[in-house]
Every structure is written in structure tokens, then in C-alpha cells.
Image 1 (tube, rainbow, N blue to C red):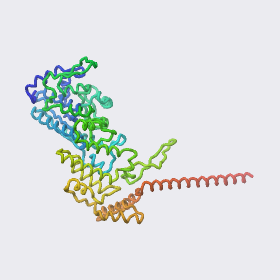
Image 2: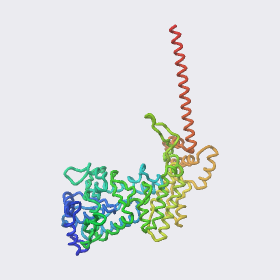
Image 3: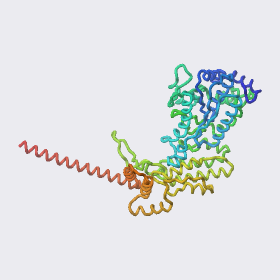
Image 4: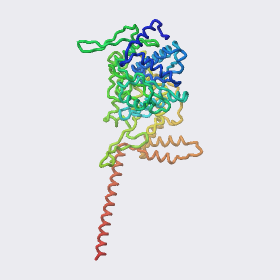
Length: 541
């Protein structure tokens, strides 16, 4: 082996040969990883989240490769981390430093390991969807973020490697003790007589979970490189750590895992957000290594703990996250969100009575109203500037995302932003302008928008409808054939441009008319039945 510190070589070997993990010596796990690695030419993709489990599997694989002869290290290992762009900043820094250290250590030790980070496409990021399109903050019932921000980027990376190598093996730090549901899914797709399982969604990709049977103490044992014993205490049997190997917290590629321990300690021992590779992987919920914007749970106790343990600079992020969470409250939905969806229609809620769906007078809310999206963006930018002014290099929203949000505002299906406010908001916060592109879809000024808003109601026309009709005309102008323009005009006119109250009243009137018409039909039918009965009686006479 070639290690960062040559004098540690015997310590590493002694640790591997003597320490037991879930009843087996660590050397057996190292040997098994080596056996699976050597048995074919399929490259490995290690899902690395920076948490304890993925770090443990990274250490195990690194040690296994160090124990092989140089000529046996015949296939590549890609270490891939997924950054949603709204990860907790402290964790982002930890993951970035770890990836760099792994890359340096692998180059030094001549291991075929490279580090990679994937991010969602610009139009699929959290802010592009929430601030741009007005998607509501994620909830348990509408968790739109996981697939766009986590599954898709990792799947794209894996698919690219499949296209390059035909097949790949995805190595995960999943443990049965950590997630029973995940263990069941892997067991269901397990290949008989093999250590591998089929990927649930990606063809030609296989799953390998080398620490599947480990307990949480095993995870920390390999991260601490310590001896763990159970001792009798006045409080019963307790675990005690002994740094007998002079390696405590060492990583084989260089650096200390003590940073990772402090992250867990400061967040009250919350779990980590796993590398999400498909929809069967557990979502983060209230876990430690997740997005700072996560609103799937009512309170982010992990971030609260970080603030209480000294990371007070994160308090504005916690407050912002709590504002997003409150906006999902059923009592506040109709305040912050439009009554019509992005398709321009109001959707009535339904009830099921006697096996039939019955329309109610209530409705489901649509995207965030544009005015609140503008307020939310300005608040976010102000927090980013405050952090920058205090010397913190934290980018809460990227420049490409700002361009994407602006494009969504200018082309909003219900509330086109003719004022083009985003560049104005940015300048008000930072005092300078970005290189804003000219969007041809926005041909009118703030004054034009104000004039239409003032005049349209005098003629009983919705200002937003008029703006969309003008936008449509501009988009079709100059074309030699304006195919489908009447259908597009028809779809716009058929959208629900009135207020929710007016639409509900119209719905009630329409339903009442249907009831009245139905009653008239019933009366006619009864009268006709009486006449028929009378005629039959006369004919019998």
C-alpha cells in the first residue's frame, strides 16, 4: 500500500485485520470488495453524499484498492456527488473539500479514482421552479423537487457511463438498519448468487451495497479508525472508544473525519440525506444532509441545531425557509397563490358521494402569485448580499438561475411581467447590472402595461388576457403562415381570467341552470306520461 503517511501503514493493516464489523473482521469486507472489483470490467460509480454512510463506503473502497497490485486496478471508479444548488452551505463546503481531497489522494496513490459533482439543469433547479414558474414549496403530497434536482442529474451521469462502458456498477452506502424500505427494494432486485442488484429504473446499471449489514457503530468505527468496546458502567453497558491505532479520524486519502463528526454532533445527530438514484431511495425529510430550503417537514430541527451550536450566520436562511414553509399552510394558500393553474383554468375540488364525484364550490390553488415571487426573490438576494458583506462566500441563487427566472416571468402563462422587474430588483440590491439579454417576447414598457391595466376593465376585459393576446399576436407576426392562431386565441379566451369569486358564481349559475333544465325535462316527462295514460284509457273504452 502507498499511504499519505508511510508510518501509518502497519496501523492501517492492524486495524483491518483485527477490528470486527457486524461480527466479521474488516479484512473480510475489504477482501469482498476486492473480489467484486476484480471479477469484471464494469466501472464503478460511488454515490457520495458526504454523510457518514457514503463516507464509510468510500473509505472501504479506497482501502480495498490500496490493497491491490497496481496492475489489478484495471477499471475506473467515479465518485459522484449531487449538488441541488440549495444544499446546506456548510455541507456543500465539506463535500467540495472531500471531493478535492479524494482526487488528490487517488492521484498520489495511483488509484483509478476521479471525483465528480452533478447539478440539476438550470430550468429544473429549485429557484427556477419556485421563483420562476411559481411552483409551491414542496410538501409531502407534492414533492416535485426530488426527481428534478436529485434523481435526474445522477441518472444522467450514470446513463452517460452506461453509454460509454455498456454497463456500470453503482456503489452505495445503503444499510438495512438505516432504511428498511430501501433494504426491501434492493433485496427484491437482488441477482441470485451475486452481490449485486438490478437498478430499479436504469437498464445496464447494477447496485452494490458493501456495508449493507453494518450498524451505525461500524460506520463510525471505520471513520474514526478506533477500537470500540462495551463496558459495564453505573448506567449499564456502554460503548467506549479507544484510539489504540494512532489513526483516530484519519482518512486514507488525507484529512480528518472529525469534521464530519462535528457536523452530526452540531445537528443533534440527525441522519444524512442519501445519494438519491431513483424514487425508491428514501427522501431527506428532516434529515441532516439535505436542502436548506426543504419544507417537507414543518420544522428543520437540524438547521435549528446548527444555529444554536454557533452557526448563527445561518439564521437568515432558517427564517427564509420558515417563510416558505408557512406559505404551504392551508390557511394561507389562497393569499400567496393564484386561483388558476398554469393552464389558465380554475380547478374545483371534488367529493365522492355514493361512488360519484361531486364538484364543490372550493378550488385547488395554482402557482405563487407573481407579486409574491418578486418579494421572495428580493429577500433572497438581500440575504445573499448580507452574507457576502460579512465575508461569507455563499451563492444562494446562481446567475444562470436569475436569467431563467426572468425568462419565466416574462413568459408567464397567466401573469406576464411586462414591467421586467427582475433586473430592477437585482440592481436595487447589489447596485450594479448583470449582462441581461434582450427578450424579444417583451415588446412593451411599464407604461404600456399600466395603460392596459387602467383601460381594459372599462370594456369588461381582463388586462392579463389582453396582454396575452398581444403577446400571441407579436409571436406570430412576420410569419408567412399563421397556422393555428385561431385555436391559440380560442384557448386564451376560454381560460378563467375572472376572479375566483366570479368563476364560482358562474359555476353555481351554470349548475343551477342545469338543475332547472333537468326539472323542466322531468315536468315535461311527467306531463307526457299523464297524457299517454289518459289516451290509453280512452282507447280501452
